[in-house]
Image (cartoon, rainbow, N blue to C red; front, side, top):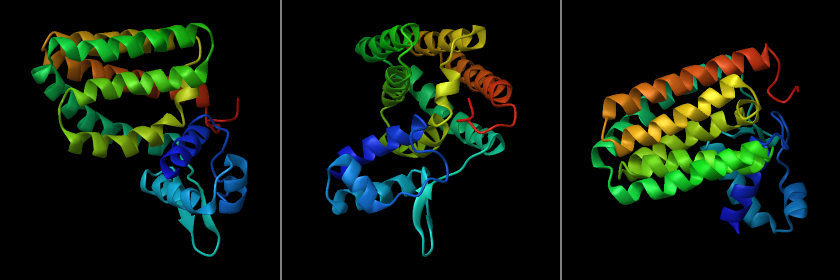
Length: 214
């Protein structure tokens, strides 16, 4: 139950249904999710560990706030960790490793085309982590996840229509091809371009506003 609560609350934060600064009141969340307090309490603890929520003394937990400058710092962390994972994946990639990321990439493209942002966010994350799993390092996956989840709250902007967003998807294809082609340098280069492009999109789209100020 705690795992189910965590996933539902994590997605609600990512999709902007629980906006930055929103109090995470256990009773209210338990009622809205139809669960008892215990799994909700554990889920909120996990959100804090992932950097999606913060505990405020005497007030409980609330959704963490982020700005574009903090996002850039997270990108630097992601570049180091995900770059390491992709290099390892490219070196260790086996023919069967391409099946899962290819399926997730197709689902991501289809979801974007039909305007289903929630499904696109899920498929995009599943695609990247399928590549990182090919690195065969549980520690890398554990370290990548918190920074990834913190960035995911900005994902809906990134998945909007436009030439920059289309280029982002092309770079995802490049990541898969680099891993399948056993080319660590190409994979690392594509990741750098991927994050650099995302930073450009966020800067243009946000223009100093909250991510949720559409």
